[in-house]
Length: 627
Image 1 (tube, rainbow, N blue to C red):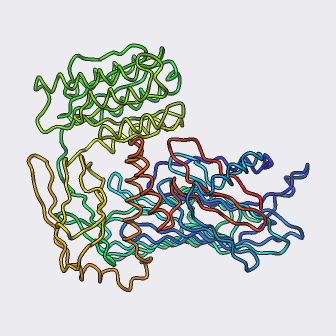
Image 2 (tube, rainbow, N blue to C red; image 1 turned 60 degrees about the horizontal axis):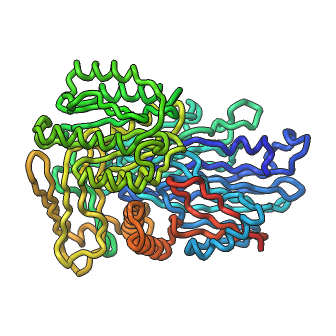
Image 3 (cartoon, helix red, strand yellow; image 1 turned 90 degrees about the horizontal axis):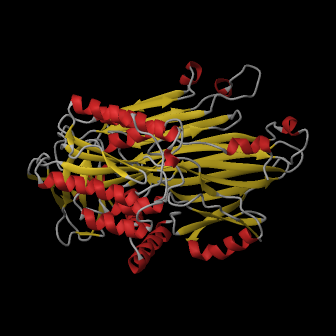
């Protein structure tokens, strides 16, 4: 057990972000009445370095921490890193007095017996667990002899996702002590050119601002944060630190009016497509809001607050309606209304009257929403070339009407027939996220968890902003027959303003040029073409110090795994087994810790197994295994 004085520092939240890392290294000591007096830096972090290379959106982060035990007896050092849930750990090692203890990635099932045996002994301390909206925590502790040194090194990789027009790297810094050699180094290389770059921090003072340097040219940027001990110090004469908060880097790239940008390294290609300045399709949106008893209090207040803001953000050419449900289902108006100023104000007044009470009929509510869109579409009451979507917000399980989740999923899939996009928002942790995710994926949408925090209303608004501006539909990225292999998803139902399509694959033959016609619909069917000279494209990445290995091949593997995992979430039986087998093979080949693999971390006196948590389940507790 951790003493309370230490345990309270384990609780951390996380904000919405594309990439984030929080690093804490503290030491544990035997609990005594004099424990507060022992909270001195017996375990001293004398060097902490975060090195991040972002090459064409693909981020490779290495965290290195060097510590020494200044006490005259053994102490326990704890290494903690919070990394993005979207990232895959690829390497971890500890070096103790010159001897290295590496982490070995293997099939999850092969480590399960060891895990189960440790759990049966009551050992449940975790190496990896979910700790917030976008974070998961890696932690490992080791006993350090008097005057001994330990080096910790953790590596993870991820593809930065463009959202609302920016890529974002968020580093949460929390060393809990002054660090003699503290440095964050971020190198960005974008062959398309960097169009915007900004940094932000919640803890940088005027003094600390002098430790921040930013150098940028056409295609490269280097951001360095290297504060001295005195700059880190919060109070003169004391050892408290200012380094406690968020360090953010946001950027975007230049884009031309073409079918995107193709980049090639060592026989693998990646194709990025994110058109700019395109008008949005009008939307037909049915908001399906849970008003059951469990939504009472703060949840319903936050939902009402968010809905009023979202209604204000509707475009005048949009159409909308509200379905409110508990044990009964209430349709606000018989038909969808155009989002005129008058109708929006009417809807806001209606939202203000919402109260919570009763049971939960999810099946009936979604059926009502689909029927409403069907009726108005048949009557030609909705605009041509518009996008119809249903946004469901619920905080619990179905408790009336149809109760079996598999039947609800089938009912909605059969009623919808792929006509309307379904987005499912699960409020809190009483919902079955697996149920919502599968239902959304089967109907062209996505699921998102809304956390029960003070900013829940902002989370709801933020999700709506992501889907508020559909600019293209029915997009197909085509490549020459027999020229490419193992291409990732290349057909997309929708593209939203501020986001980006990414396709990667392997070149199957020796080519001079790669042609890529791109077909999509806006006001009418259009086709764009992109041609890439392979030799010229490969030369772009030669002799670049920012490049890490065959990064496009690793990007392809990362993207393939993520898409296979998404497919498996809505698959059953043999199909799901085949998808998971593919994930396992690629994960092992490229050394990724994914939901199908584990990392076995060897320590001098034990082994521990790190599994990757999933959003659908609770935090996976990773058990230590005694030798």
